[in-house]
Image 1 (cartoon, helix red, strand yellow):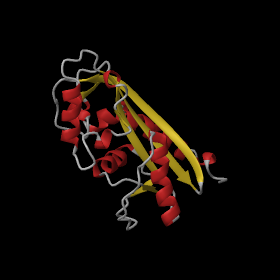
Image 2 (cartoon, helix red, strand yellow):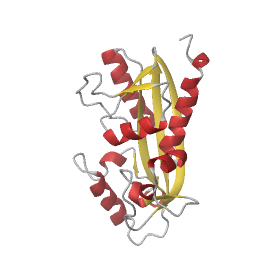
Image 3 (cartoon, helix red, strand yellow):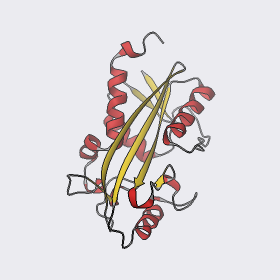
Length: 197
């Protein structure tokens, strides 16, 4: 089965290709010659994920999926949340987003956080969603060289390493995205779930 992953984020594409079964052929936006900016204007992760998947399905008529991920920090009342990718501003990068989080948490003892991923899937017009979350804490410094986004400051509960210290495989086995992708793959592996669609 061919599925378009509606993202311009190369890191996400690479991570998902590591996690997903070889029975599913993941197409990138480049593969389908889509150079449009994918809209992401909704107030919730699930709405953003479906907005992106619907954009591809409606414009190209191809089965697609999209994800949206948010880091929700207790002491910041759920921020950055849906704005995680652009927390420090529309044109800012991951490093600037991290610095904003660390600055806001300076001197704060409650560093509990949850990373959430929602995946929206559209197959022949039918919509499905899958969620994954992992609880952890925000470190006071950047630790590790791997991963992307907030990985250097997020340490999952019961682990002594941040996501950025883990291999892709190790992170994928416990991460919010890994959990959501696992649910997607399980769903797609059973063709009875969608063969009559």
